[in-house]
Length: 64
Image 1 (tube, rainbow, N blue to C red):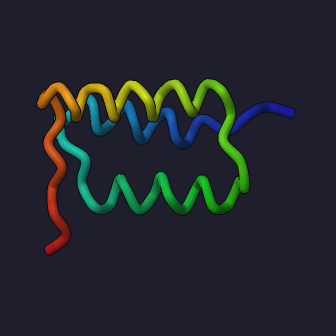
Image 2: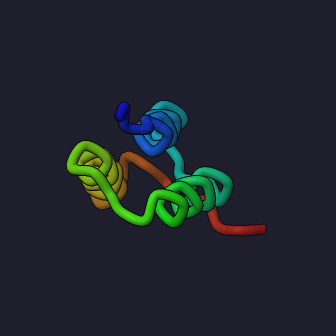
């Protein structure tokens, strides 16, 4: 069975635009809920996103 790459694509998008929007965050949460687990690769992608946010390279956009 091929693993879904949705979370990785969402993380890539956030890294590319240098911000975590509510839409991206909600899509990540929805995919995690749908899958019911997190793969090692997805975990590493999310860890990278959080590290970049901690460094100030990625801004968190508040909900409107």
